[in-house]
Length: 300
Image (cartoon, rainbow, N blue to C red):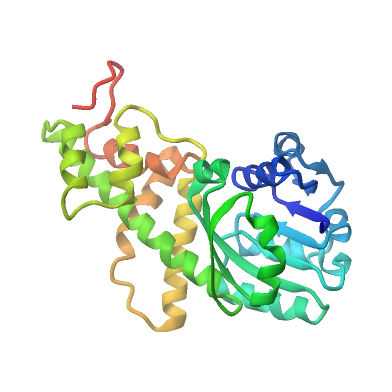
């Protein structure tokens, strides 16, 4: 059994680490917020460098490319401490160009670097049913499969370095479109006096069906915002990364303004660090103070 390190034990990283530990695999973990370490089940490392030095496989679950870069090769970065032959698995949502640069840098040190975009959110992480889209060497992915299995039920090798993060950005953009557009539709349905449960039933049997209508709004209309998922700030970050990717590829970004506006609005109205499902409340705020669910427990 390989020695496992995990850096970034927050909302998603902590849940994935918990799954690995509960599968009987010890993890040496580090997070700058010490309170995150205990619930993850990991043994605490004093630093990311300590976790890296002691591990054959190092997982990263961090907010963005800038933080990933700092963790890897900043002043206290893990790069000099990684074992030759180690595999770094980056579970963050990062800019593909940054990912490819890190891959090349670590390859020169004899370290494999996999970019493993994740989909499914906190609920799937807890159940062990995440989907991973992985870029990098197939041989390195095969080596780490036993340590992905506790938290991911679907693992796709999508191509060379950077391909995992490209795929993640494409998927997250469609997620952002579905969530923000459905939020707008549900606010309109509320103002029109429709029974929202019936509206969702219609949508889910019709051409408007999407992930948000199936999995998010049946809960939201009861007052359950499914806390623990991607925040409005992080959703906006992902959409911005998507637009940057389109610029690099020379693809017209005709549909980006909608989710950029929606999640930007949510940030400005005080929902920055709340789950992105609260974008419906931001839209409701500027539509006359609309809420899909009221204190009496009704959604009509």
